[in-house]
Length: 398
Image 1 (cartoon, rainbow, N blue to C red):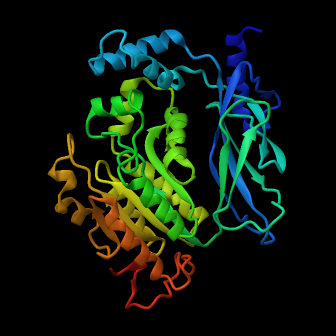
Image 2 (cartoon, rainbow, N blue to C red):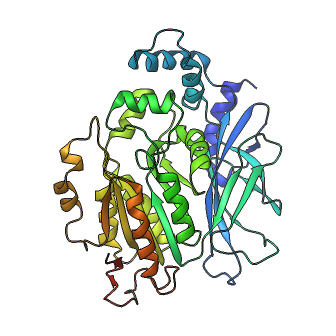
Image 3 (cartoon, rainbow, N blue to C red):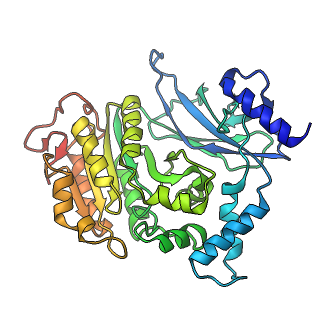
């Protein structure tokens, strides 16, 4: 059967979702799969010792459209005033491959979860993405909050995925990516293109050490990385996060296979609603954890986090905003009026705008000290149990 006809049939039958009787196992010689990091949780109605997690996989045909890549490389090089044959064109081409690779609906893959069990993921829907909730096999010892386990596709050469175990209560971290932990230059289009397609990804100075401290101080708290970047950048951002920051799912914009102009638009438009919707999903799954929210001033992180603090005042325990200066970041984004307006009505002890990550060490330690159990226990939608002298509306008074 011709590939184009097979692809068309796969797209039609993929509308049946997980009940698709025509699903096919992926062929490692023809296809590839991205396994996305996830978080294991206690299932409702479980026996107290059980865990489950939603496993997400994205399926693709293996061979990208080389003609399209050549056109897009020329487009990026032109926007950055790079001469033809510039040494960076090879890097640009590699990073643009996900923009031109055909998605693969209606396929499955088997994975090994920590070497303890195997499970089938898929079939993927019309977007090529599958989601399967899988009970986790016992590890042979009592699994603790913050433990991790790696899984890999059986017989397929691809990056492994990491599952982080998260109890119903405890600390947790939501972090933005661009210009919060990675230098992107969101306020300047050429800077966005260069940092995404040409340069080695660079962490914001001091943030890897701060996040390592957070991970220790908050008792191996789970992290979620929330960004307006499209899923095309998942391998690129996953590799960067693995190199510099604690494990945790990358919650990226579900908009892929775009041209470069559409990517820039997605990254520079206001993603406040998208981020709030994602955080509401986290609240539904973990309503009793105590969240630390970290972002920057380039987009709408202050407004999005403030909205969550108003909706769930004892869920959001601290908001830290990195002030970003430079091209595209004028006084309207970085001045005190912007932040006072964004956080109007919230306890002043809840939020802090920082220029240097070292400002946050003492605040993190005080946040932990303000919790009598040191784990975020007692937080959530119920009033906090801490004395008013040290805690107010779930916010440490520093």
